[in-house]
Length: 153
Ligand SMILES: [Zn+2]
Ligand SMILES: [Zn+2]
Image 1 (cartoon, rainbow, N blue to C red):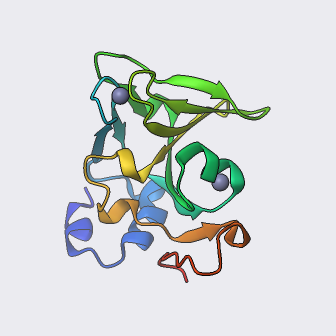
Image 2 (image 1 turned 30 degrees about the vertical axis):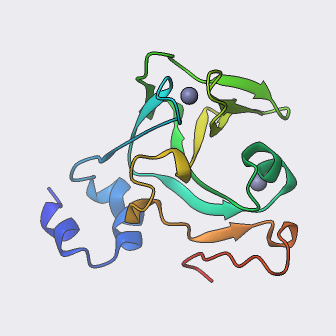
């Protein structure tokens, strides 16, 4: 059990990288949901590829200049709200964008991969350190005056 190592928190990134060999002490569950509460989820960590993206698809999907994302294998995401799984719009050959049919909140993307990419804004605790973006995709898609923070930059 690598609980002591995790507790010491030497390096979160390092711990995550070594997780597959060392074994994850205890998987953290991240909850979230839409504005109206019809669609809710529980995603079991660790969260993958925490990043921000300023591509035009993310901008239109979220209405925001930059979207913040994390990924989970789809078998680690459970839709727990009364509305079940979100509605989807087929946005590309390999992915669909997900949203609540009742209130319109954006959840992110459900890929054929099978990967579920969730937007940080729908998490109950969007500030969780494990979800912090580490890179920024499609920087050129943002207005010059829009400052995006990502740990790696
Ligand atoms: Zn809703
Ligand atoms: Zn994007």
